[in-house]
Length: 249
Image 1 (cartoon, rainbow, N blue to C red):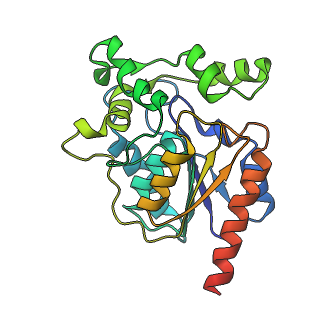
Image 2: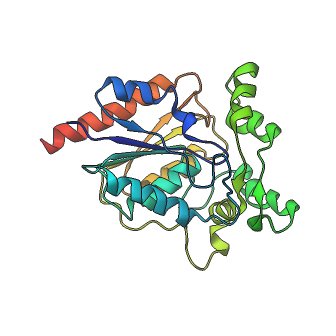
């Protein structure tokens, strides 16, 4: 029996991020789980939720699996995956354009701007932050056609301001909330060469921090699980899993 795969979505999103991306993994014989992070759904609220809350939730799901799963995280979900993998055993850790952990500096002006722009909302760490279509269009879904971009944006929901603050302003966090524990599993970190949210230089630092392998798709941007070329990203992930399985054998 092949290891199950857990896919963790990023900020403002849900498990629907992986509606297409999961298919090659299922075709390869993996059971795929795409949970929504806490606070989503009818009656839910993300206000006050921490990255630690997200990590604990995914760690519980990991422990519920019959064997250590393969954990895949995108964007902020990539950071959640790093934190969860430090709390519960996983077989592989795969990061798609991941938010960097505590101590890894951004490599672009856009990352610096993101870290300070939300302060215009006041004490945003106490709020639920709604998605901004202009930001999504320009930085996240920039390689998708307009109709597809609009459809995905319509599914987005508010994100925890506290989780965003912990992710974007780690140097102000004395509790080191986003510092992962030791990750004993093999790690693959993938970047899009056109991504300005988490550019290749930052993802490369994250891979080095975790002792992992770095791979770049030069023509791709931030929405690695769903923009044109996502099939090649999934194939690279499956190749990584297969290579590690062969090495273990």
